[in-house]
Length: 83
Image (cartoon, rainbow, N blue to C red):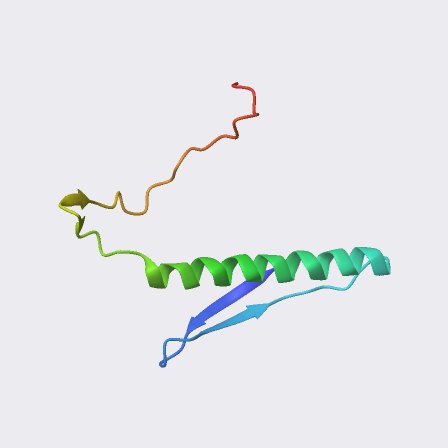
């Protein structure tokens, strides 16, 4: 599990993780994979923030496009039954 994230002076991030090796080898491998995936997801979210807009409008071919900002979106699969 990600324990600590530190922003460095050069803009990089230092991430500390904590793993406890318990159980069978399969359980330990699953825990390692889960932790690495969590770290990858965290790093990807942070990397994508580099490309977020500042909220100002973008004009392309006389059409104005604006950002809604960081808003939680509700999405569903087309094959998913409504609740």
